[in-house]
Image 1 (cartoon, helix red, strand yellow):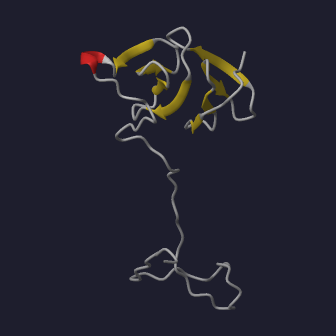
Image 2 (cartoon, one colour):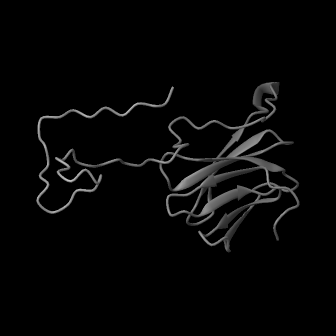
Length: 142
């Protein structure tokens, strides 16, 4: 059963979404249907943080109140690793998790061809040949 408050989400490569939903992490398909629930590894946890691991087969979540972080396998739900930030008497309040190497923006591509637009309509029509030897540079508006 989904919790009352969703704290964080991450988009998966297949377009689905993982949501840190207080008592569990919920996996939704691209249409928004719940396809898996990952219960909290510890009783009474408040799962608030969520990051994809760069391996794309697991994710990290954290218990806001207990100071533990968990690496969880997406396919099986198995807890692969637990990090207790309260060890050695040093409690680290988990205000968020950052995973080095996590992809946080969509990757894409831009492609095209410079061509001789003989009729000036902005479309490469039959007979309008590509032009070689040009370098095209894309820059941000800023």
